[in-house]
View (cartoon, rainbow over the protein chains, first blue to last red):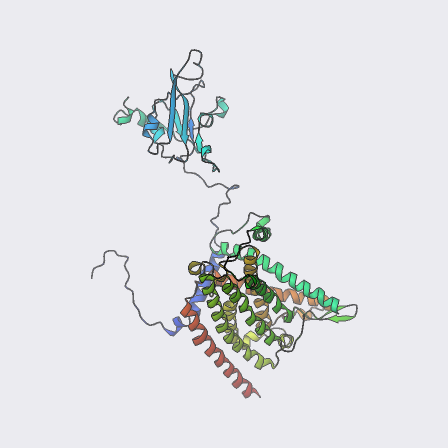
Amino acid sequence: MTSLTKRSKVVSNKKMTFWEKIYLPAIVGGMWITFGHLFKKKITIRYPEVKREFSDIYRGKHVLKRDDEGRERCTACGLCAVACPAEAITMIAAERKPGEEKLYREEKYASTYEINMLRCIFCGFCEEACPKEAIFLTREIVKAGYERDKFIYGKDVLVEPVDPAKRIDITRRQTPEVLEFKKDKNQRHNVH
Amino acid sequence: MLLYKTILASAILIMSLVVAMYSTLIERKMAGFFQDRLGPDRAGPWGLLQPLADGIKLFFKEEFMPNTADKFLYILGPSLTMFIACLISAVIPWGPDIVINGQTFSLQMADVNIGILYVFAIVSIGVYGIMIGGWASNNKYALLGAIRASSQMISYELAMSLSIIAIVMMTGSLSMRDIVNQQQGLNWNIWYQPLAFLIFLVCAFAETNRSPFDLPECETELVGGYHTEYSSMKLGFYLFSEYINMFISGAVMATLFLGGYHFPFIDKLGLSPNAFAFVSFLVLFAKITFFGFIFMWIRWTLPRFRYDQLMRLGWKALIPLAILNILITGVVILLNQ
């Protein structure tokens, strides 16, 4: 009979020999194996002191970027919310009043912008959809909490600080390849 | 003399409790190391305060008693188990005599001339704690666990006692102190009675309900076995007495087979009697620790036996072997006369 895989094994019900029946050699063999494990390298990572290394393109908590002059880039176009498969993003758009030119880059901005971190699956589609390079996923972890409402992150948490020293670095996500991809008009979502 | 005995008794009791307390930590640490983990290391340096944290947790847990339980027996179960576990240490010689102000004192609580019989008597009472606990809980899993425990302990007690008869035939005495004193230096019983030692070791695992003979508690099929319905410190007593039993059975095995507190050359160091007693005690303690290690090592190596395998091993393998061992010992003794 031909087997479907090369890994199949023929099982036999042959009688055990005396050596196998007394069971002790097997026990000693097993104990020898476990004894070896005593001296193996431990795989435990002592979490708060030591942190596991993240992948280069780790997708964590979102950030809403400001431009070089400290103005919010987001124009509340809603493409991220459309792209979001988990429907985690909601926003309300507002018109920029005269005198607010220092705060918002364009005439329209998001007066509220909320991401429900319990719904978010950190796929990064919002980042891909964003035509204004406004939203990015960072290497920061979304912290655990006791209450569900605390997981709806608003602009107070998401928008990065104005202070240039405290800006959040997203160069790992916004590589030249990514920028090139965003200019590619063959990709349907890049056509505006 | 009464004062001395009181002090000794409390010292032994406290020692057993502290050792049992820290065995829980060592067990978890060992489990971790055997599985390439680190084990508990959060409470205090290297997790040294973990047993304290566990104890405090057990004390503050809700004290739950099932409605249908037999109240008196339900409380009696764990208390009895704990009490019995502490009793056996009375006949174990912890070291040679010490001298205080010219008076000699024995490091053994009671040198009864039927020491071994006493040990077996107490061990067989030990099964009542589990039986009563399982029965009083009024729960099918607890009852199943208790039934398994009692049949297992009764079966293995037989082989255990039979294996010791060979030792008794060799020494011609039932007193623990006599048995120890005949094993000076490296003249240990294990060299003369390896088979008896093996049988005794296996039975000790079964008697203390340690893996691979932990069918009475059997988490995977019986929820928790006889202590399913127990919580708080009553559960703590059950778990704790297992570790005391482990310690004491280690002490019994060291005494009967590994020469107790004897070790080659420590009597030739020219130490004062008290220092000698102390060193001897440390030797005994090291041997007990060795057995503790074996207990844990086996636990994290072997899977649990099936019930029919357990019974077959006890009745069809260990008891005939023990009887054969007695026969061989008898023949050798006769030939040497």
